[in-house]
Structures are given as C-alpha cells and as structure tokens.
Length: 180
Image (cartoon, rainbow, N blue to C red; front, side, top):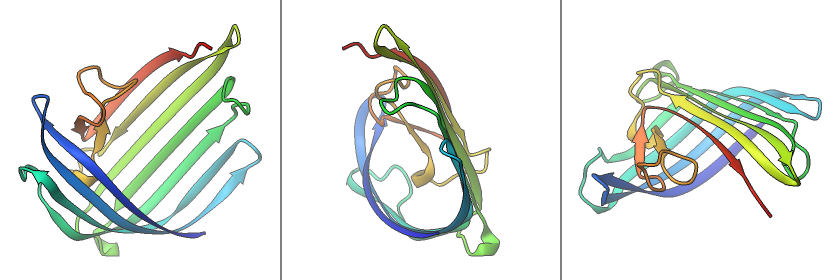
C-alpha cells in the first residue's frame, strides 16, 4: 500500500547537560509496502521506502553535520503483535522495525538500523503493571545523525532528560504500575 508522510521535528543537542544547539529534522517520506494481517493480533509489512531529509541547525552551534536534501532509499519492514485488551491493561505488545538504505537503489549512503519495543501488561488490583523492554542498533553501519536513536525521558536512561542523548545502539528495560 503506498503512503506519503511529511514530518518536522526539532531536536535539542546537549553537551555535558547543557543545550548547545537545536536542529530541525524535516523529511518527506514515501513508502510502497505489502503485508499480511495476522488475524486480529498482528501485522507484517515489507517494502520500499524513500525519504528526502533536511537536517539543519536552527539555533546554537553547528555540532553535527548539516544536511540538505539527503536522499535515502531502501527496504523497510515492520512487524507488530498486539494481544492487549481495549484498555491495554492485559496482554502483550511487540513492535519491530528494520530499515536498510541501499546505494544501488539511489541512497546517498548505505546503512542499516533496527529497533524494537515489547510490553507485557498485567492487571494488579485493578491497576495495570507494565513490563517493558526496548532496544535498537545501527549494526556499526554509521547511520546518519538524523537517524540515530534519541534517548532520555520517563522510563529511559536516568542520566538523560527528554531526548537529551543520541546513540547508534541502545537498550532499556522498565517496569511501571499506574495506580488510580
């Protein structure tokens, strides 16, 4: 199924806890993918993805490279399982995404990345208890700055405030209970 998306995100860059720059990540992305619906609990999609990205400093120092009209073309795949109930208080959720930018398809650089998020929800006395695990990697393929994993915030690394850190490889785990 074809899809087109336009995104504009601002990303703060920190050095030793101080914000030193803000970058704008502007992308136009198109996908042509095919997939399977797995009854009422899952979906798998695979196809081609093309994105044209601008990654430019909006304020502060130029720490990371600025990129203009970077063309990324490659294969993308998404796999999702969701057996949670309507309130997401019981059941399991898994989301895995992978991307491989390929020079032979016209990408400006070749790299790979994959990430996942898994959650198990269990009701405890009417309140949901969540066990969560997440991770990602660029498999040492030198993913560009606009495609690194941003970290920080609630349930993330304690040393990083919201979107305060970026990495080529990441993993995290958490358990949380929401009381009413």
